[in-house]
Image (spheres, rainbow, N blue to C red):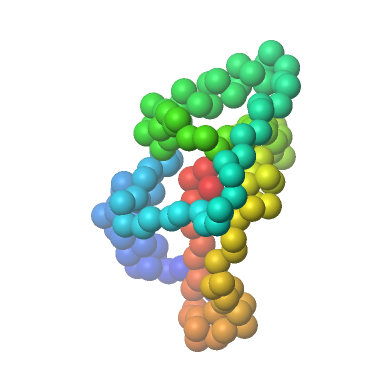
Length: 137
């Protein structure tokens, strides 16, 4: 089933009224707080991986870009994890951080994952379902 003219117009108006929400630039929220419970583990500092000069330039560019967007801040933390550049299928690179060592000492939250079948049941008899892709994950 496809959207009719009126439905398309309503969606267009809804999206237009929330333009900042649909920005290509990542943002921050003050509505949530997250902490990582590492118990009494000593801080882990993993040295950066060796990378090529091209990769180093890409890493520095990504860091400066994220600093300018305001989505990261300089840190003086005793904890450190190395950056990893992962190629995307379209040829671009994905800037990632290798948190293996941090994950090894992190106490997991005991919050159960929602069941897929229950989530699908909540959709009921919906005629249309949409998805949104979060900017830069």
